[in-house]
Image (tube, rainbow over all chains, first blue to last red; front, side):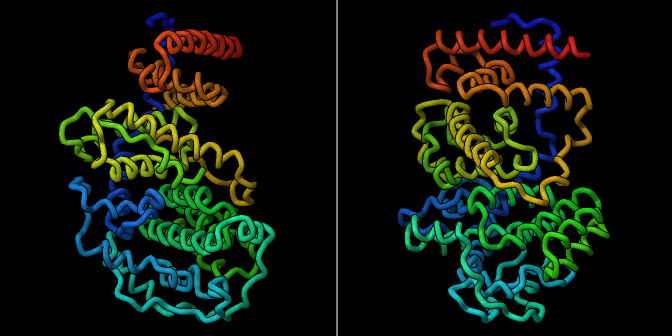
Length: 253
Length: 183
């Protein structure tokens, strides 16, 4: 059907250009895909194989040509562990982030543990895993918070292990978000935050999400005191306040 | 619908390209995937993630291609699931105190202001459409695909596809006239 008016045709031509990705978009997504394939844990062979789409490393048997550092996948699979909830995700500047004070969420444990297993090399060259294994800043452990009505609802209506799976997913995505922030890729971090919200709506690590979002926004905007203030107002006394402030003041980490 | 479900429900079909090479599919169809995601209402901030999700599904499912449809048809099924999932989540997402000041992912420096404005107008128009007309508009008008292919991609008879195209074009024209009269 070719009954476009010239006005229509012109507008659509511009709109197509406006909707199209740039070369940078294409390269950024390609790089992220490469990292995902390299870092995601090998998919188990059972029915859970298809997990979240980002668990695509399980398709390594396929001869697709997405580059995947050979050394990374196995270690990364171990790295994304259940214990990871108490592993500190650490800022590039060395400031604690997502510190172990959240350990109380892990089946009532108030002990902040640090993942001591071998970690993979960072795809970006950042010695991320040294940082990840660094002792978290000393933060007094807090007792497990009472479950929110939402969490209770999930527990009562879902499968018995659903809350743990949700928490695992939440931690796993937060780690990816942390990597994106370290890589100075705030758009990707924001995209992952959207993914996190879809995968685990609400979730338990709300403060961490807000901190990550604030930092991503500050990276994107080149700094924003308003964002830091908003975070401080929403989470007074947060362990992440200094890192958020630092990022928002400098516009980068 | 979770990303997992979106993945599980993604149709498994076949690329026409021999070998089904992932890189080739990525290079050839990235523009199509990206533009369709935007056309189908995926927010700018979620675009990277949505595009990754699409191609991760492709990556996983490539070995099971059955070569029964074109790559584009297969991709569009995945894109549609991912976009629908994203839209539903965006709709039901609770207000986040940090969302207000969230800078939108503005068009890159390459994007001309007029292009961005036209894209925004089209995106608003598409957002107001129902699923049936949205599909036809995105594929038939924005992507300029031939109606026989569109009909196959969305699984309707050719006449139905044409009928929807006529209706949505008329609607678009009215929106365009309205926009012009307001200037």
